[in-house]
Image 1: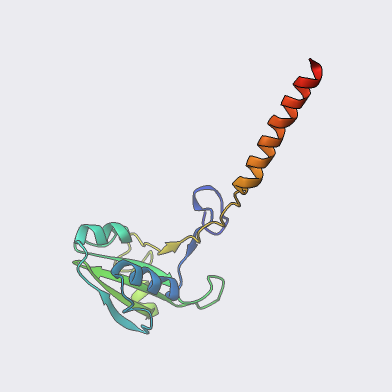
Image 2: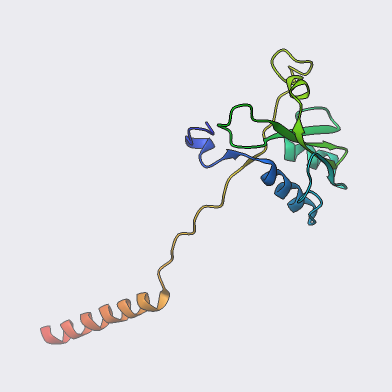
Length: 154
């Protein structure tokens, strides 16, 4: 759905490392992950159930994770990273080895654990709103035209 842009997935894309950093920075109102490379503790103090809902409640009752890409989705050999939360603390892992990410594959140790991807959607372009003054002028002009026409008919 995401790649085709059809219906429910329209406009959504899988986040890259920069979007993942922006996500954690927005959550905590600071930018501890803005320049993070590799591994970084991005913030703490969120309620565990709230943190779980943000990332999809996909791992355990106290920890959850969401994957992101480290480059264009089309790139071959693209590495992945993930944001991991444990009891409301967010940790950022920029590059994950194949052996770690393989734990969540169909044959991996956590094959029954759902995989959540961190998704984003850019804000839609604003629809231009006509200026109110020209609309008012056109309306008053129309009323004036109708009044003049009525006078002529009498």
